[in-house]
Length: 467
Image (cartoon, rainbow, N blue to C red; front, side):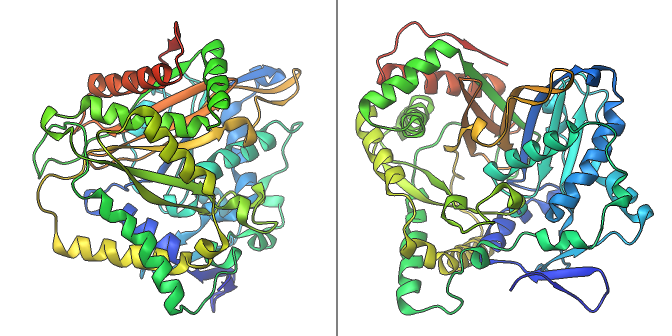
C-alpha cells in the first residue's frame, strides 16, 4: 500500500515493505547497544567558490536542509513503535519545522574530519546532515531502510543543487507544506508492482535466492581481536585512491578483458581475504555479495533522482573456491554482474525478502555458535559523477566537490570494501569496526586489494594516495 493520511490530520503512514523490513531487522540488531548496524554514511568534500567563500554557510546549509526535506520528505519519515509502519508528519507550523531542523542538522566545529563524527553516531529516527568546517565535509547519515548507496549520493547532489541556487533561499516556512507528501517514497514492492499474493513458483524462486546465503557458513575470513562478548567500538575506514594515470590503466585493462571494474575489484577483494586469512583457513571458500541497484528496473518517476530517499537495492551471495586463480574468480563475478536482474527475479523479490526476514529472525532466536563470520565483502557505487557533479553553481558563487565517499555502520567482525570512481580516480575504502580490527590490519587489507588488482591486470608502477 502507498502512503495515506491517518485519522490524525497531517500524519501519513504506509506499511513497511518486505525489503525494508529485512534491512531494518539487520539495523535494529544494534539497538540494545544504542547503535544501528548498516546505517549509511555519505560525504562530499566541498570548497566554496566566489561569493560563497564569505557566506554564513552554517545558516545557509541549515536552510537548504529544510528545502531538501521538502523535496525528499522521506528524510523525515520514521518507524512506528510497532515496527509495522512508517510514519510521516507534515510540519504543523514554523516552530515544528525548526525543531526538526535543529534535531537533524548540526555543525561539528571541533571535528577534524567525518571520521571523528562517524565513530560517535547513535540511532536517530530521521536522516541527519552534519557540516564539518575543518575538513569542508558534508556528512549525511541515515538508516539503511530509508535509502541505499546510490540514493545517498543523489541526496547530496540534490542538497548541493539547492545550496548553490542564487541567494537568498526562500524561508523554508513559506514552502507549501502538505504538498510534499506526494513525494514520499513507496516501497520497492509498490514501485516495481510486485505480485501481492505469493504462488508456489514465487516461493520457490525466493527460496532459491535465500539458499545462496548458505554459502556464508564455513567461509574464509580475516583474523579479528576480541572474544564473543566484546562490544563493538566505532566504525572506521581504511581508504586509498589511485592516481589518474593508474585508474586509466585499470579501466583500459578491464575493457581489454571484457569485464567491469567492479568485477575486477571483487576478484581482488576475494584475493585479499585469502592473503590475510590464517594459514589454516585458506582452504575454505570465500562468500560475498553480488549487489544490484534496482532503480534502473523501475518505471519513472521512481527510477529518477526524485526518489533518492527510497530503498531500491538487492543482492545475493556468491561463492568462489580457494584454489581458483584471480582470473577464474574474475570470470565468475563478471558472469554474475552481466546477468543483471530478470523480471522473474524481480517478481519473486517480495517473497525473497520475506524469507530473508524469517531467516534473520530464526538466527536471532537460535543464537550463534562457533566463530562469527569475519569476511570482508564488497559494495560498488560505480562512477560517482553519474549521481552527482564535480561542481555546483558558478565560479562566482557555488561549490567545487573535491571528493565523495559512501560507507555503512559496522558493528560486527565483518567489513565491507566500498568502491567508486570520482574525478577520474578509483577509490577503495574498507569500512570496519575498531573493536575487532586495527587500522594497520585494514590498511594492509586495502594494500592487498590493490596488489591483486594491479597484478591481475598486469599493471606496473602505480601510485596511490591515502586520504
